[in-house]
Structure formats: structure tokens, C-alpha cells
Length: 391
Image (cartoon, rainbow, N blue to C red; front, top):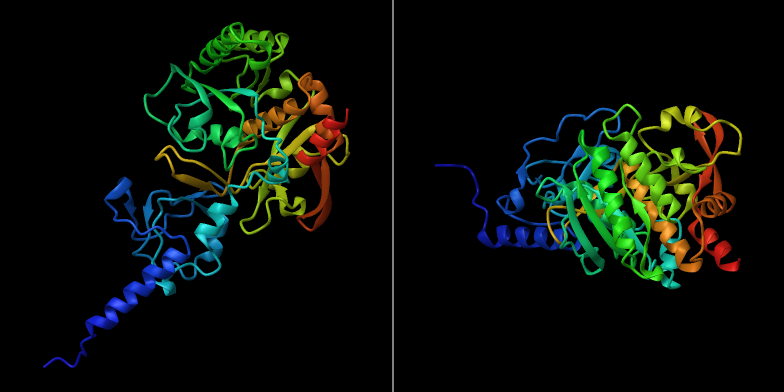
């Protein structure tokens, strides 16, 4: 005869019900692994290396005991609203709330939502975006997607389409009421030709629009070098756009304007609206002194980059949290800021915008490798808009 004691069915059901209820209160998803192609993990992925991000998107983590992994997940984890976390309280990571972090990451930060409440939302401003294939039906931007064209795409939505939500997403974006004209391209060896063709299409479209409806901003999160095929084409296209009053923000913006940019880091749990919450972006923090000399005359504007929640290509209401970002996230952020600026000053030039952004920027003191140093200029959206509105 077995000495094992049977567990009453009522007790089992009560435990399950309590666990499900607790998970619901915490905003955790409870989904079968067959939905959305979830990946059932038996262990956490290996350390991805310096600031690469641990991929827990579309992952079913219910088999794992993550109780002692809170610090690791806070530092490394990329996850989405499809990720299934352990239900049992004793298996959930201590000090790590996925639902809270995901929601916090939607805030574009630095007081932007204060401006949105004042009606400074980019309304009436058109942004052209040149990037990889977009999930056109995502709730973040579908109602303001005025045009979607495939110049040379993959044929299915790509994660990089999240740039649309950063620029103009209704809940995560910098300019949540701006209009979007999107051109899908591959960022491969034909990248330069693709960007040039897309810019040409934007200028053609502008010729059919009234002055107040023209596309004034182009966001393209890629770069081009003189040794790449098609460089002359894209360089000429950007210069033509500039001559026609269209600001093309890219990863090589400093080749065309008197300013550049870099991305800020932020640890989950730190207030996105609080300037001291920010530090150099995770992937370049060790090289801060190389990027930023000790003088205070830098024209390299700092904008939020890390710990952002953006639209996902996996579903109309799916969101992804990226613990570590890249310059690709900075480009649409600046495009959105310029859209807000144009809303209050429709005649604003790029040079005037850059000067005002630097003049109104914030600086904070940070400690790097035991040395106190000054971090800045950090974009100050509220101060910038108030300066422009007073002119």
C-alpha cells in the first residue's frame, strides 16, 4: 500500500483558481503553447553577451522556476505581450513585473505625455517612413496610415516596422496624431537604391498635395556610405528633399545637418519622465568618453532608446518590450519631435529646430566608472515646444 496521501480535488482546484486569479491581476498571459507559435522553453536562453538582449518573445516559460532570476531579466530580457510567464507565485521572478514593465515602456518619456494632453500631438503633420515591411493593421497607427507602398519588401511584416509606433503610435508614440506615409524596403545590398526610390515617391506625392498637407519629415533608420552601390542616388535624393523643405532623418543625419544624435539608456522601474532616470545607452555606455568629449558644446542630441515598448509584427494588439535599443529607435523619435515642433511653428527649418533643441536641452550628472561626469544635451520636449511657441 502506498504511503502517499491523496490531495483532495477541491484543494487542487482552489490552488489553480488562485494562481489564475493572481496571474490575471498581474497582467500575465495564460495561453496554450499552440497559439501564436509560442516556444515552450525548458530553460532560459544562454547569456546573449554584452547588451544583446535575451529573447523571450513568444516564449512559454511556465515550466521554469524564475524566482531567483529577477535581476537577470531586468537587465537582459526582451519579451512581448504573448510571453507566458509562470502562473505559480513561487516560480515568478522576484522584483520583476512583466506587465508593469511593458506598460511603463509605452511611455515615450521626458514629459511628452504632458504635451499630448495640451493638444501638441503632431496633428495635421505628415511623416514619411521608409523601413521594412509593416503590419498595417496594428492598432497603434492603422487609423492614421494614409499610404502604404512596397518599394522592395519581404512580403510579410517585419519587427523593424515598430518604428511607425515610435514616431506616431497612439499610445507609445512621440506624435500620436501625426499622419503616416509608409514605404516598405529591404535593407540589403540594394538599400541605397530603395531609399532613393522611396524619397522620390514622397516628393512626387508632395507635388500633388496642398502646402498644408505635404510630407515634411522622412524617417529612415538606415545609413549609407560612399563605397556602397547606389550611394550617389540616395545622396542626391536626400539633398533634393532638403531643397524642397523635407527633413530626412537617418543614421547619417550629420552628413546633411549641423547636429547628430545618440540613444539614452534607462533601467526598468525608473520613471521615463524623470531626466535623472537616464544614462548612456547600454551598448555604448562603456565608450561614453569617446562619444562625448568633456566640453559642453556637443551638438549630439540624446534621446530615449532603451527599455521601450513598441508595436509588434505578430498581431494587431501585440506589443514588444526591448530592454536594449539601437539607433533605429532614435530616428523615429526625433522625427516625432520635429512633427510636434512643426505643429506649433509651421515655418520651422531643420537648422532652427536643431538649435532650439540643443539650447533647451537638459544635462544631468552621472557616475561612470567611479568618475562624475555630465550627461547631455538631453532632449527636453516640453522646453523645446514652449520655446518655439513663444517665438
